[in-house]
Length: 355
Image (cartoon, rainbow, N blue to C red; front, top):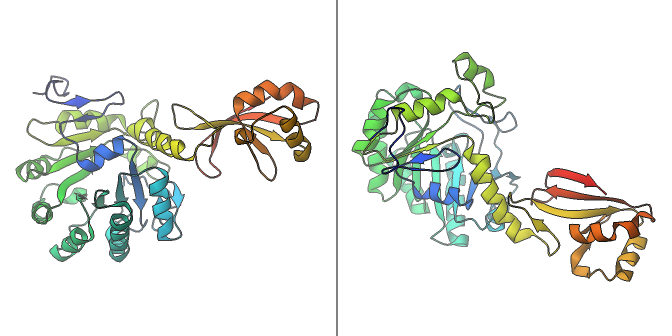
């Protein structure tokens, strides 16, 4: 049952600390919630111009490939990223991924061959692919497909019904993924009748869609980039008994998805002297100065070699050790600091504390 406020009763639905509400989670979402899903962006090209599209100017309408935040130059980069986070699955997205169907097929086959048949792959598409295309995707190893029909088709989703049926007959899990921007009873009925799933995303403000969203009456939350009205609409019109539905708020991406993925990466790339935080960032110390003299002093002080790393222009060292020996180093005119950064090569520095 749905309460008077439009929120499902807790006996039938599950919620979490960031506001996700669901009666069903497809496998792709289950993996995402663990931070174990790699996002493979295969192109920024798309035939549609959706007013709510949050894709950045950097990627929009450009044939760029990213594995999570990492630019991809060759398919080996995709495997490197998957292994770096211990990926259990991959979500293929864009733009419109099927504009690069051959490349998508290549990636599917590569992921399954190198990471195993159990590596789950799902794909988003704004098209209704013909049976031949669906069959190619299925044979290449696609496990799950999510259709994203344009708003103009929400009132007459007959083609969507056929696409869901065709995908399911081929053995793929099939569903619909749309933003919560207006009621869509016809979409709800098709999903329910075809025993598919519905993923509902909160509208997300970005630099590229901010003006168009506000012109249509949407306003951002006080904290975050989600649209307030979108969350209200989702809970009022889409959380229905007998429907496999998952409402995913914008804040989930940073509060859960990104944090858990960073933690998985940090566990795999952290050096003996890196401290992993609860947010998946790394903390260590940095010493800049006369490198030869600093190395000699570290040896004299008995600092184990595994607790520091010599770079061309600095020494990275365990934060606790640097704090303990900072007095000895200050007389050598060293510049010292503690840094917290993302666990990426050249990762963003979140905080720097001079010593």
